[in-house]
Each structure stands twice: as C-alpha cells, then as structure tokens.
Length: 75
Figure 1 (cartoon, rainbow, N blue to C red):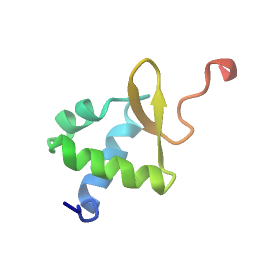
Figure 2: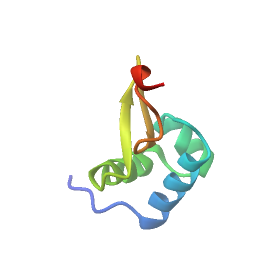
Figure 3: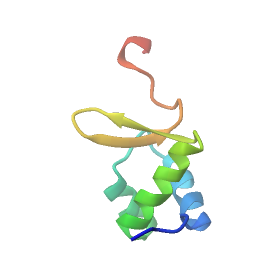
C-alpha cells in the first residue's frame, strides 16, 4: 500500500523536538510529540530526503538535526 506524503505539522513537531536534544530514536520522538511512530517515521524519512535531519547508526539508529552531532574524530 502506497503512503501519501507526511503531515507537515508532524514534520514541524519533529524538527522542534530535535532542536531540544542531541539525538533521539524515532520511538522516543513519537512518544514526546504525541504522534504515531509510523507517522513520525514517514516525517523523518522526508526530512532526511530534504537534508534537514540525518540518521545516525551508533549500535542502533538515532535521528538528529543535520550536522548537530559531530563524528567522534571531530569532537
């Protein structure tokens, strides 16, 4: 089943929440902003394609604002 575009309001909430933390898991974002994880996942996917957030793979997957988290050798 094809999903439509992400809800712009959820995308705004995700970006606003990510401003307050260094990184977060999608499940945590969904709980904090009061939205379904599937809707948050879709919003994060679109935001990544728009180059506004990035996926971080640190033993598990996190989401962060683009460029907010530095690589270990950059700190």
